[in-house]
Length: 73
Image (cartoon, rainbow, N blue to C red; front, side):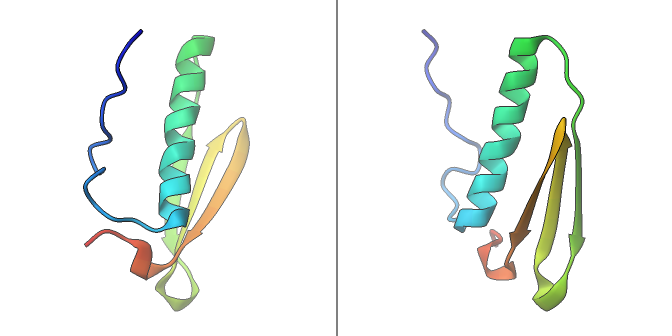
């Protein structure tokens, strides 16, 4: 069994929406590698109140709204 490698940003604090988005991206990659092939598109924009709207499209779309105070500095 392989050891879990630490996430490169693990030492940084992040809010729950950012953590969920990063976890979702990781899961999409792992699922795609197990399946053998996959396509994924990630887009982002700045919405109301300086929030980041992050959309991950991989078979279905996942949308995350990340408040500016959740972003790592």
